[in-house]
Image (cartoon, rainbow, N blue to C red; front, side, top):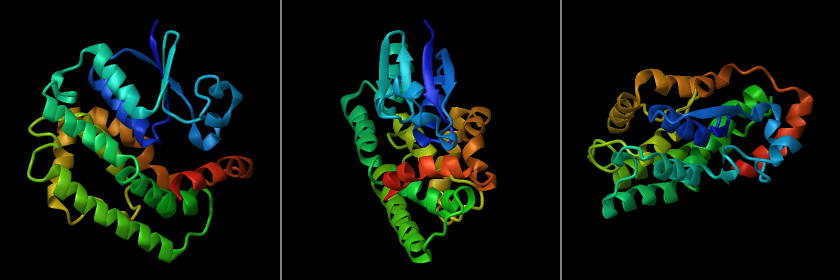
Amino acid sequence: MVLELYLDLLSQPCRAIYIFAKKNGIPFQLRTVELLKGQHLSDAFAQVNPLKKVPAMKDGDFTLTESVAILLYLTHKCKVPDFWYPQDLQARACVDEYLAWQHTTLRRSCLQALWHKVMFPVFLREQVSPKLLATMLAELDELLQLFEDKFLQNKAFLVGSHISLADLVAITELMHPVGAGCQVFEGRPKLAAWRQRVEAAVGEDLFWEAHEVIMKAKDFPPADPTIKQKIMPGMLAMIR
């Protein structure tokens, strides 16, 4: 039975899984769940994931949620190259360290910046406090510096000379729409050079295929009022 991945490439964790599966030639059936249409809140999707969040995975009768768990499952099941999740104990621990750290730090901060800079004013037509936005962007800037100092340092990738799951998760967190004003890579030559190495390791075509949706977020049409009412509470709970 073919692996089923329930994804929306607007979502950072979904993009990481999509790139990983495609790059490693893992056969899968893409089941698109459109977040901005509220499809993740449907009763049908709740049968797959009662938490009503993407990503989700079905492998026959086995269902799994949470992006890191899915990435690790695919790593073990599909015998991918060692550099993704190294056998070396300390290198693997470094991957684990980043995957544990990012959930409540860099990923959350990037998500807040995206929604307050782009999605609220463009898609939901909601006013955003300039003071709140400035605070969030300042927090993101601090985390980017911490990312460079603690995790990237002077290495080619986060865990040495090869790409790993840590790099894949990190790069999908940091890709923001052109013109979003987050300026993630601007003025950070070390971070920008790392981004270019990750893109080269993934492959330019796949890299931009996965990020096409998010890079066009600033051009989304306004949300239908019914959809807005449905998704707004969940988005606010997620990023505040």
